[in-house]
Amino acid sequence: MRFSLGTIAATGDPCLWIPVTSGVADYNEYYTLTPDQYERFGSDETAAAAFADECRRREHDDCLLEQPGWNRGAPR
Image 1: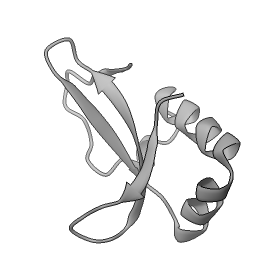
Image 2: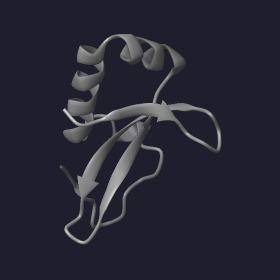
Image 3: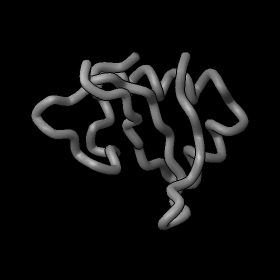
Image 4: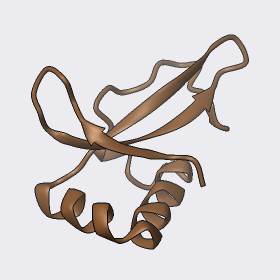
C-alpha cells in the first residue's frame, strides 16, 4: 500500500497522504489526522494502511486538507 505519514510544514498538524494521478499530473492528496490517529498509525501500519484504503475509496473526504477540483485524480 502506498501512503505516507507526516506533518504539514506550515502548521505542524499530522497528516497522511496518498499518491493520485489525474492523467495530466501526479500529485498527493493530504488528509488531516488527529494527534491520536497519528500516534496510532505510526505504531500500527495495518491500521494506517486501512485508513489509506478508505481514503482511496473517498470515505474521508471531510479530512482532505484541500478539496480537489473538477478533475480529481484517481489513486495510483
